[in-house]
Image 1: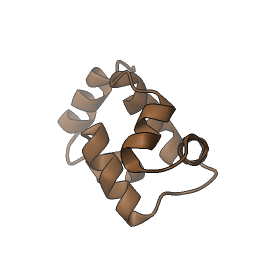
Image 2 (image 1 turned 90 degrees about the horizontal axis):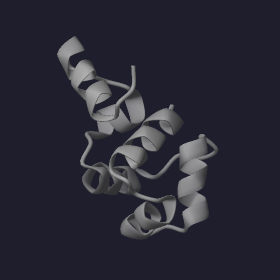
Image 3 (image 1 turned 120 degrees about the horizontal axis):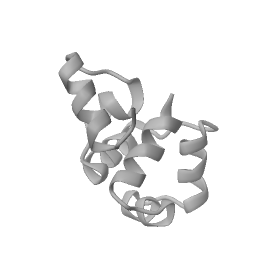
Image 4 (image 1 turned 90 degrees about the vertical axis):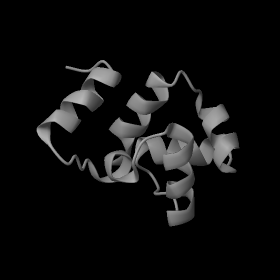
Amino acid sequence: MLRPRLNLIKARGKHTQTKIAKMVGVEQQTYSHWERGRSTPSIQKMLLLEKVLNTPKEVLFFDVFNSPAELNEFETKVSIS
């Protein structure tokens, strides 16, 4: 699910929906729909989000971590327990 990861990563980077939307070339409302799980970005936009948020697309969109240590590292960066 997109919502939890996009919200956490947005908070970690201290970005706003408007700023991220502008960086990936979409309206703020479109980005908001991605965060809420109402729609899914195209593959091209997923790749841009990966770059802009400096987070692998596997983590952003599929909750895929290569190891428990990788998951721990992610959770530490975004301050979740």
